[in-house]
Image: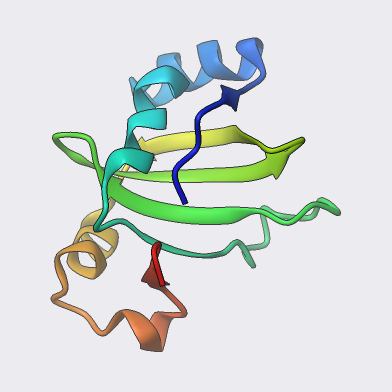
Length: 106
């Protein structure tokens, strides 16, 4: 899905820049990547009552983004450089279906 509007918590954005070196504004470009992969966030970090999605895509470098949808907007929760396993999933070196991932447009 392509989003036209994005939002985020500005304090969280500043912390993300300090920790990971990626702003949420830059991370929002991941949604322009037609080859990104996504799955529901079932991680232990997601102890919230909202539906969250993990996506891996390229903005010139491969990144990992967690987001949710609120009021027809994409709310970015976190963004970081993808680790080696995530880059393998993105580039197709691993079977994405066995990991619960799928192409974003499917």
